[in-house]
Image (cartoon, rainbow, N blue to C red; front, side):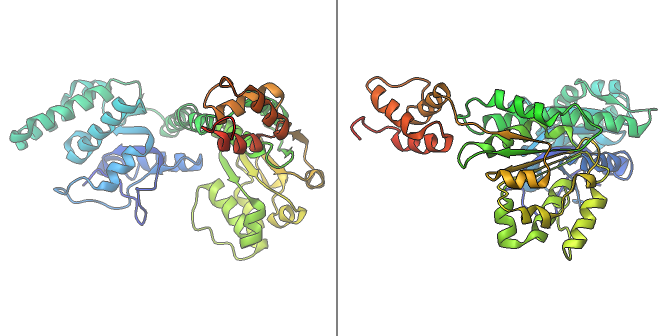
Length: 411
């Protein structure tokens, strides 16, 4: 039985995964590993999973290699016959290389073997390697690399789940994965996706306070209001990346106005449920059916939902998303340029995204126009003229700054 992950009907050329799980199918596929995948899915963690078996003797599939390369966290489930599978060992070596090269995290799970057996390659692990060395007499360097990877990953801090309640250990593992994703993946992606973010830390902190994230016995709805181009979406995107790992389900609809206008409210309901539940191909027959699904599927989940670019009350009414449909501790964030929409929906508070002050506007303009933190000598007068013109509006600063980059002061 091959130890390999293949995602049917999808291309890993465009797929990134939160987690890649390496396991011996015959040992754990229908037990521990199956429960682990289910727990990961409930938390909205995108794990690469095998849907078919590959015959021994075949080369590692490109999809598998790309899935490993595109994953942020690795979990290795060491079981009694793990080392007997050359597929598992090839996977393990690829994972080891990824960890060494990029510093990604790997979590070893010792299922029905002791950590000592894995690290010292004794017991069944020792027997398996003796057989590999006999079988691959002409490729002993490959076997040596397998040993190195096994020892290195086996020596890392992980979980010995023998003789322990599996569901409790799985919950701990999933919690650790969420922490790793939150700090190493989502946080870094959001905060580094643009080098021109300014005044973001303080704004995110203010928004967190308005959301009252420490209160978990109520559902809170917050509006984000401000003129076009002031940075509402950028702010909420940064916030979403920072706090989303705290939630069982999360959804960011980036343009509700466009979604409803082009495809109707049913399409918006489908996107909301698909993203929140991490489930594709949601079938919704009509608005009432969609409302029923939102009400029944999300009522027990702590959910984070962002609705961006809402410009009509009817868009929210047709979506039929109400706070009483969500689990305790849930948060809804509505982004709009229209204060009336937010008040009409009954938000608990509104965050007014302000224009940048002079210092922050100058900082952003210098980043865009000069790729620097300071004004280039000779450009002082024109820089201050531009700042007067844009009046602290981030989008205008970015557009004009990018246009002026590498131009002579006369231009």
